[in-house]
Image (cartoon, rainbow, N blue to C red; front, side):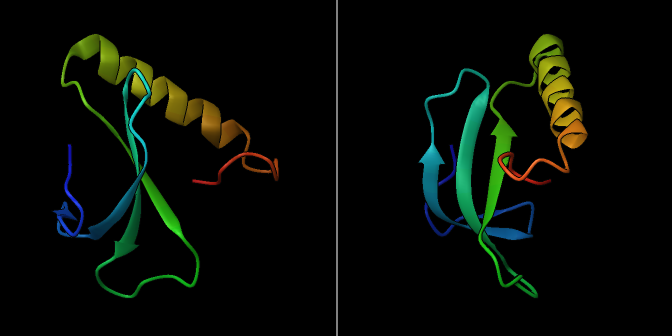
Length: 76
């Protein structure tokens, strides 16, 4: 788990935890370290490094990309 103010991948500073109850990972409120956008950013990361959880995580990302035009789904 990441701590508040910790920098993830040298790109995002953790502002707060949005959700930590999911089975695959956590969702964090973050701010880009350089050139922050004028909107709030959330970062979801996968806790596990196992092959199956990573495969499921990637599938979830692919499914979210299919909903890019839906205003009720977070855009990635």
